Length: 66
Image (tube, rainbow, N blue to C red; front, top):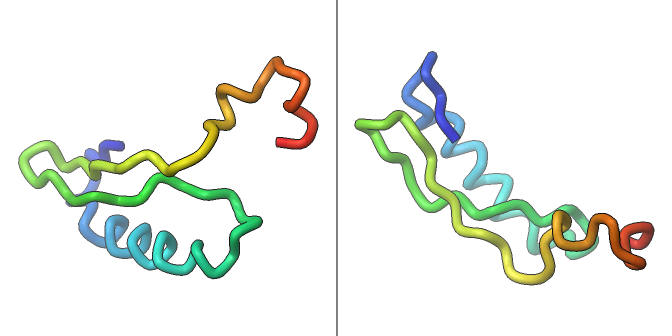
């Protein structure tokens, strides 16, 4: 995820706080965990969450429960 208008560090910190609070809410949408900020690219790197991806459930019988 790139942020051409700023360094992305503030957004990284907010995403880290969000990721830290998600385990307390297991029914909440689980987002990718921020891994770090790549300064030269002004980009945040993420680690994919465990479990099934929403994109893999679309157009299947389990789409409604997703």
